[in-house]
Image (cartoon, rainbow, N blue to C red; front, side, top):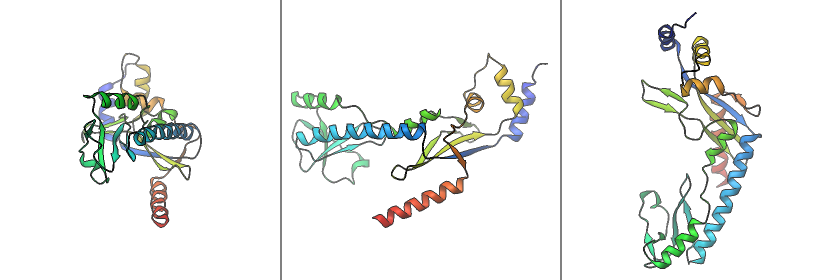
Amino acid sequence: MPVDQAGLQTKELMMSKVYRRFFKVTDGPFVDAMNEIRAQNEENYQQAQSLCEKHGGKSVIYWNRGGIAAFVFDEDPGRDWKLIRRKALDEIEGVKVLPKKSCKKGKEISKELDAIPKHRDLSEALAAIGLPNNYPLIFMCREGKALCAYYCGSHSEKIYFISVPWKEVSNEKLEAYKKDSNSYDSELKFLTEWNPHESMEEVKEWEVDKYMDELKERASHAN
């Protein structure tokens, strides 16, 4: 019997609800991937720091999602370097620079810099549990929003929380999508194929908020 797609869509609009599911993770593939990325980034940082000090600088600034933002010097290192003026770096003391690629020495330093692997975004660890990094999973068309998965937590305490966007969809629509090999819908594909890994314990949002508040409090006392 053919599926009444128009009827399903009307029913879907009446009952669909977008929300987030939360999972606590303390071990398993996500934690393993996080540890691997952090270790690699630390090695990258040490290489970049050594290069910075080799040329008279004192520290390296990385962008949150990878890539070196600048080397920091106490004083202007000269014509082989270009000044980096970015509002996001204004609070960091010192002269922020990167090597110029328009002069011989600057090119040589740039070549050394390019040989250092770029920092990896820690959110890449989500791929270990079947979740894409910074890619929309659920769409809220009326609001003009697209929701991604994300994580929070503490590396030192080895406690993470994964937030996964979700949507209530009728079983009829999910079954119809699975049977229709000629259609593709990224949202329905996610809802029909993704399942939490066994290392993921589903929890309530208030549990996540409670832990994060306590984490901030512990950090403030430590400082």
